[in-house]
Image (cartoon, rainbow over the protein chains, first blue to last red):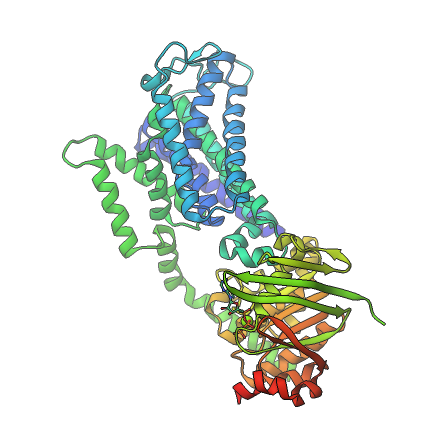
Length: 343
Length: 238
Ligand SMILES: Nc1ncnc2c1ncn2[C@@H]1O[C@H](COP(=O)(O)OP(=O)(O)OP(=O)(O)O)[C@@H](O)[C@H]1O
Ligand SMILES: [Mg+2]
């Protein structure tokens, strides 16, 4: 069993390494890096929605918060290591507080959606209104709709002059994405993850089993906030500026669409959905004929109508149709063997 | 004389104008097997929900093993070692039978022991053939059995079963009765049932609910022979 999982790990890592090295051959790393960041952001919602059953309309709030926390603390502190950690921690704590209020308050799903959406809008409105010189945190001016430019970007830990940008930022982001994916995978296979799925399936039964669903949902929500915050910090480093647009409704809607298109409740789906649609958006940005929002909306409608479970489950279905025949015979054989030993 | 493990005092639940439970005083001893009967709408399920914190009683008290649990959260009560099978099967549809039972066991045992426990329950309830199936795809009787497995997995000392035999084949019911007897060796069990055959084969003492209150509580044969009970319940059924 153990050997088997180590073997799988090695194979997955090898595939990831090959993909990491091949992608820059076909595409500019400046285009690739944000796609990976979107993947991370998609994974954060995919985790809490697909496996925890928490539909959050405000994942962009944690993304934007991570970006702003990074920018503000990088201006004040300089060296990027601590700002990066803060950009994970503060969105996580904020998500924990928000989550605790919603889950301990026993809010229904609809109210949960409304509140997370409103929180995002408040951030958006507030950040837009901070153009005046009185809005400063330490030495960082919030800058209103112009955002915050000119902060220290990612550097090699401990060496403030060794910047990580361009190709190296791409490789670092890729490694972070793989690492977080691996951690999320481990989480989902742990008792915590399996109980989260139980709560998604049936809250009443989970509490009748003795699980405190409020505490567990709050924890999961905070983990999602941490991952989104990390994505935000990486985005800030790539863009080298943070603006209120990070908190926009469009951003929040896109994350949800990534998850639906990629396949909710799958581990890879939200990542691929995010990267794929992110790339499509980039291509659409190159021309003026088709509007991006219309195409995204159209894709969403087509998926909801024809592939409601998303891309990854559809691929799995095709796979099991072709390969699955051989597998399906196995349980029958085992049953026969047991019948023989019984008789 | 065995100790009292469950007691309610003046337990009352009102929904607007409807009093679903009306000042119920109820006592159950350790390892007792009790049947709860009563016509539709008598308040049996509501009584169960008040015991498990799924509903907050309007007034009155619930004591479990001498401790007041009246306003506790459902998961806190369940964590004491109280298992309930709800009237409408409440299972985890999207995961396997084994996962359902493992999750129930994991609350009370560390991972490895929970693995063993789940395997044991699956064996005892003859769920081996469907252990890997998604519960949502199973037939009604199988789902009932899975829910019983979930209840048994935590080694509860108090088991509440709301119509466990409903919609089952007679073969399934036979098996169910065996499982219930086995549970009753370690736990106090309350069963809500309508099927008189079933009640005769499992219980000695029967409590009759009528319009939210306890109408009578006695030996099964006496209850069935009682004129008032016949009028409110058996008469209607027959
Ligand atoms: N959530 C609720 N809101 C309003 N009224 C309710 C609610 N739950 C139950 N009732 C009412 O309380 C009364 C008792 O219902 P309950 O389900 O406890 O009966 P029961 O004895 O379990 O009946 P059955 O044998 O049909 O399962 C009924 O009149 C029912 O309509
Ligand atoms: Mg009922």
